[in-house]
Amino acid sequence: MKKLTENMNFTAKNGLLDRRFFLKAGLGVGGGLLSASAIGSEGKDRFPWMKQPGSGMGESGPSNFESHIKRDSVGTQPGTTGSGASRTPIEHLDGIITPSRLHFERHHSGIPEIDPDQHRLIIHGLVERPLSFSLESLARYQHTSNIQFLECSGNSGGNMMAPQPLQRKASDLHGLVSCSEWGGIPLKVLLEEAGVKPEGKWIVASGSDAAMMSRSVPIEKIMDDAIIATHQNGEPLRPSNGYPMRLFLPGWEGNACVKWLRTIKVTSGPSMTKDETSKYSDLRDDGIAELFTFPMGVKSVITSPSVGLNFAGAGIYQVKGIAWSGSGKIKTVELSADGGNTWAEALLDQHVLSKSLTRFRSAWNWDGTPATIMSRAIDEKGNVQPSRESWFVGRAKNTFYHFNAIQTWAINSAGEVSNVYL
Amino acid sequence: MFISKLMKTICTCTLIIITQIVAADDVSFGVNNPNLGKVLSAEYVDQVDFVVMPNGDGLPQGSGNAVSGKELFNVQCIACHGNEAKGGINGDLAGGHGTINGPLPKKTVGSYWPYATILFDYIRRAMPYQTPGTLTNDEIYALTAYILYLNDIVTEKEIMSSETLPRIIMPNSEGFVWAYSASE
Image (cartoon, rainbow over all chains, first blue to last red; front, top):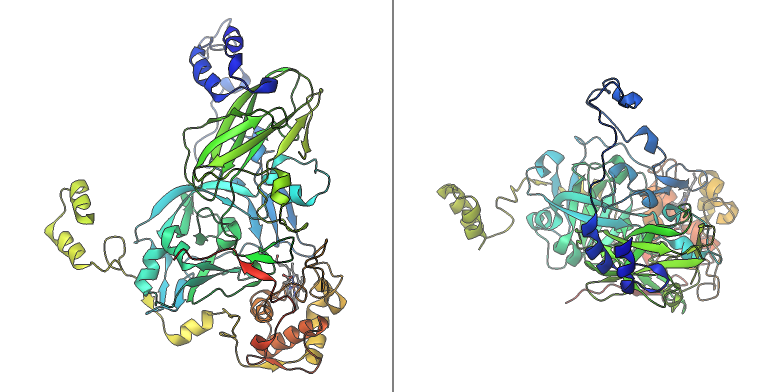
């Protein structure tokens, strides 16, 4: 405890500890005594599970004691089972990878069960040669993999739309974001094989779900870093993430990353599909709507503490959360425990990757009095996460896409956490 | 540059591999691309191509008007979208005119959508929700006509087809700008 008070001059006001504090304090952690050894018999202690061999190898899921960690707030449109969403339980996770079973979902007509042997990827339109690829043939193309986030552009919309802050868990509010290692084939290679004609400026991607989800994407993005993703976190895509293949556009809104991808038509312009006009367009306060607002803005959220994860009395608590930007790497995450008057830099975990979730951490010496805590991310391009108030400038009152404003949590003297607007 | 990098990493690479790569300065053939795409016939492509463009490209033969569209709607769509496409459980397809730049914008086909062609494209792909792919082109044109009629955009008898649909000017057609612009 001595070390802590020595370094208190590194804190932002109200007990928040700056990352420099961790770098110094981190060294002093000593190895404590191990609990009872498992080897002894007489006079030694064993838990019941130490008294007989455990179960065998093979199939296994998460611990039965963690079964509450699952996709959250599953919802679908009335009268349907497959037009809705489920959310990643971000308040229960650590690190940057979202386990595939917990990746958020947003489907428009359910999850199709696709026979990979019958599935074909078809490239047609303004190309020299319309081509079809089987999964087997695609496996012989050079693959690539990257750790990148995927976010629904409707994520966090509740904080934008609700006049009074919703008292919901972090997953309910912000769980339409996940991060995976996506593996697949650069789409550029396949388009070059088909031979894009000079007039080909966009592609229209269509899925083989019952809604045949379709989105238009500029060919520049396709030639830059788009992939046909076949793998997620090492295994073939889960059906809920587009098995056997999906379009993946690093940093761009999730809806454009068409799942269960079947056809790619090269066109001279966008098709203006329902999901790039009626939906996923951003209405301004002058009545004009912006189409093709693809990149996801710089954003962060403290996942602990958050609603439901309360404090039990004054003292030191670990603060952690996730930050990401569709424009590149996260440069810094700042934290404030006094309503944004003073800020302390959070510590970033080792993997700070482009268009990926970044894990940030800090510690808070909470004095037991009511306080607020919030995080603000800044990316390598200099984009700064906006306040809720400044996000609204120029926007219509009920458009909810691309909401990336700062999330503020309040802690009362009982240690209970609530969602507040600042 | 590519070759020297390859030589550095794979020092055992044979002359044959090198000549193949050198010969293929066209990137569409090389170690990363075995060129396995199967060339498709025009007929095959036509069967899998659902894309409709705002200028009407991709719209098939066929036609229909709001009179027959209403009959179909009341059988196939009314359960989810409501009588006259209002007040259903899955969102209104009509109404909200003039609200888009007001305090509470109500986005519907008539108040918000930029092109009438989107109706044909979307209904053919995805509706009716439980049985997509079961409507004929005439039926889709008729349903399109009926939804446009409910939004006071066409008259009851007006025929919708690949000729007429792209020519319709939607009430909010001027209400959009592109946030994306190519960096050239």
